[in-house]
Image 1 (cartoon, rainbow, N blue to C red):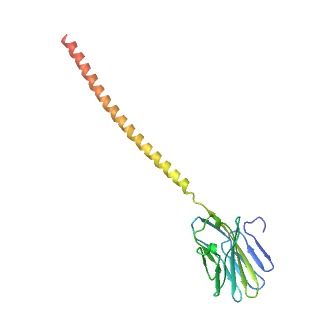
Image 2 (cartoon, rainbow, N blue to C red):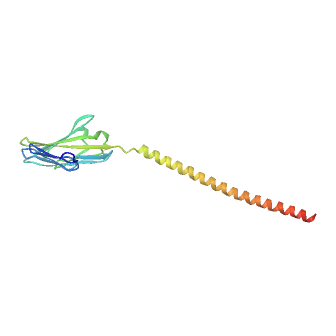
Length: 196
């Protein structure tokens, strides 16, 4: 399937679908992991759900790690119904779910990167999944600059419109006065001519 945006490869019991489709990985021992959204785009201060779903025999241990240019950080590790061990860096920012998913609250630029999830069943079989998270900054300074510039231009145009209106009124008044003066001067000249 070369040349397509979505590809599927199978080896050692693992099926990987790339692109916008879900990623499903099955280990030979019966652990399966589905990553329905392998790419997530978020903005700063948003909450994001890193969604996965797994199935296995017995009780699973789930571990999430974050890898970025700043290094690798363990986020959380838990065994369903047993314990939850959340890293101090993520203590107030992570919510765990029984299906293996986690929710990150109030993401920042440092949260961009790769998120690796490992599901390990009691018998030692593993399944791995990866989610890529892109975090974008909303640049309020640019929006603020545009708003201030727009307000300034609107104020200048309003002042110019008022100035043009005043000039127009002054011109009309001047033309009326000039017309009256011209008419009265013409009348006086006519009267003088008649008297002579």
